[in-house]
Image (cartoon, rainbow, N blue to C red; front, side, top):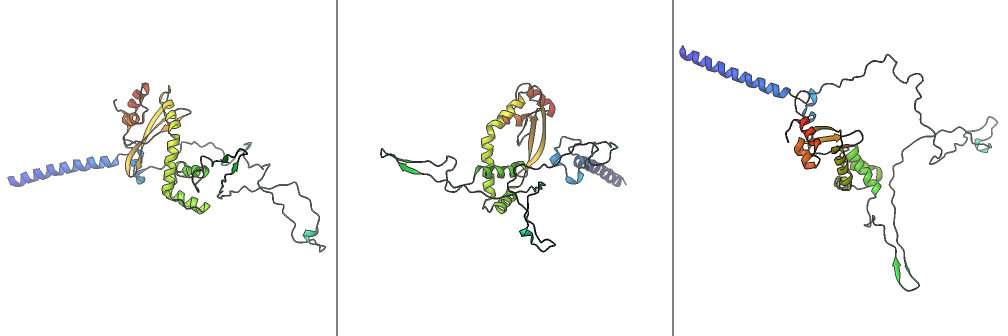
Amino acid sequence: MARLRAENAAQAAQIAKLVARIQELEARLAKDSHHSSKPPSSDPPFKKPPPKSRRQRSGQPPGGQTGHPGATRALVDTPEQTVIVALTGGCACGRDGAEIDVVVVPERRQAIDLVVRREVTEYRTVSGVCACGQSHRSPFPAAVSAPVQYGAGLMAFAVSLTHDQHLPSQRATELLNALLGLLLSPATLVTWGREAAARLAAPVAAIGQAVAQSAVAHADETGMRVAGALHWLPVLCTATLTFDAIHAKRGAEALTAIGLLGGAFAGSWSMTIGEPL
């Protein structure tokens, strides 16, 4: 009997320990960005609550209100092309419409459309011999350094698709190739993005320094995935400037590596994220 009591006591202790462990794990799983320090990117999709609008009912019917000026599309003064619609059919007298003298009616209607096409510009140089006997040849533009290359407009549009519209490189490549009849590869778009980042490095750094040195600035951060790994996106902004950057670490360590932490702003950011410098 004593042995059974001892076994029951041991089992009860083991059960209590397991129950406590289950409660701890359930509490850990229940944590999300709303009531813990976890970033929003770590929230499971099925746990995210539906967005709640803060708008209050105005009592007005939906749609445009009486007296609202509205906004309509205006006719342009210089359309790219003008089509005069000819008379068709014939008159009841039997005369064909093409035989009737006509005048253009003042009423106009315009259709705004999008024309997507590639434009190839060919550069040719010239050569000549001066009266003194010296030969001369005009140079190609400095930006045209290869027999065939892509222009700045196409590269800027591709970078806008991938970095501004957040279109994956593969899909952006498929779109450009289908629209323009090109043979671009995703690797080419990645290279263009890196080249654009290098050209913009100086003005981006200047924006970051201006925000960090401002008297009042907002600081926040969120998590995001980079190649499957959790990274951090600190955001610094004023009323007119916004700076963000991606780093594998968070808080003061990230801003120090980015080169934006210093002075009074360092203490403000440290208090915001609760990390001592």
